[in-house]
Length: 335
Image (cartoon, rainbow, N blue to C red; front, side):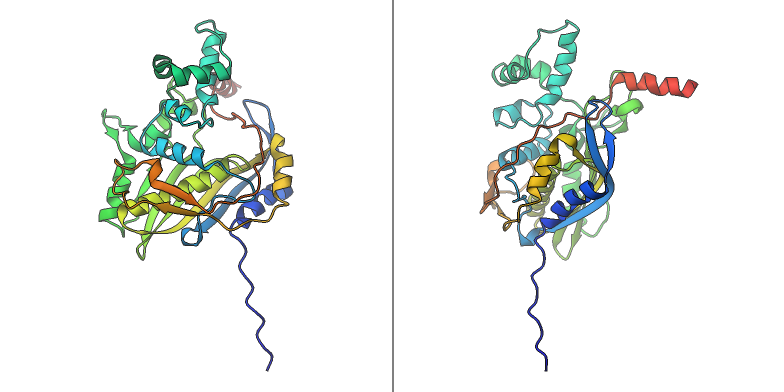
C-alpha cells in the first residue's frame, strides 16, 4: 500500500497581505490622488482574515511600530480628538492633519508661519496652543464615543456595542459606524466638512461559540503604510473587547475597498515581497482589563516580535475634501 505523503504545512497568514501587494502590482489601475496629484496603483474589493488564536497579526516582513498602533487605538477608544495625546507619546502619524489646517490659516496671514517640526513642538509644550490647534473634531474618537445626534445627544457607540455583546450575544447588530454624512464631503454644510479622510469606517462584531470576531470595512487603503496599522489595530481591538466581554478571540476579517500603493512606495513594496514571513508575535492582555473606562495601553503587552528591518516611506496626506470641490460639482451641474 502506498504511504500517504506528509501533510504540508498551511501557508503563513501574512502571505494574504503579501499576495495583496502583488495583486495590486499585477492587476491594478493607475490613478492619481485628487488633492496631491500623486500617482497610485489601485484594485477594488478584497478581503483577508486572521485567526487570532494562532498569533497576533503584526506583520513581520517589515517592522511595524507597535507603540504607535497601541496609543492610536487607545486615542480612538477613549474618545479623544486632540493630537496632543499622540504627540506626548511620540506617535507622529496624525501630525500632518492639524498642521495642514494650521498652515492654510497661516498662509492667509491669520497665524504665524511655522514648520511642521515647530508646530509639533508647540503642541507638545504649549497647552493653550494644543487646545487651539491640535483638535480634529468629528474624527474617529468622536464618532466612536460621542456621535452627535440631531436632538443634541452624544451617542457612545462603543459602549453600546460592548453592552450589546455582553447581554445579547446572539444578536446581529453590534455595529459601529464612523461614516457620519453630516461632516463629510459635499454632504456637509459649507465650512463644516472634514478636510481629511476617514478611511476605516465601519466594524461589526459577532459572537459564535464563545468566540468574538470582528469584520472591518475600510473604504480607502494605503496598503504599504496604513493597512499594516489597521490590521494590528483592529485585531487588538477585537482581543480587548473580547476580554472585557468575557469571550475568547475569534477572527479579524478585513474587507478593503479601494486598495492602493502610492508611486513613491513601489520600491519598498518590491523589497518587502522578497522577504519570508516570520512567526507572528503574541498579544498578552492583563486580567485588569475589566471595562472600557478603566482600560489603558499598558495593560497590553506584545511578546516575541522579531520582524525584518523597517522599510521607510513617506506618508501621503491624500484625499479628503476641499470647499473648491463643491464649486466644481455645482459648475458641472450647470453644464
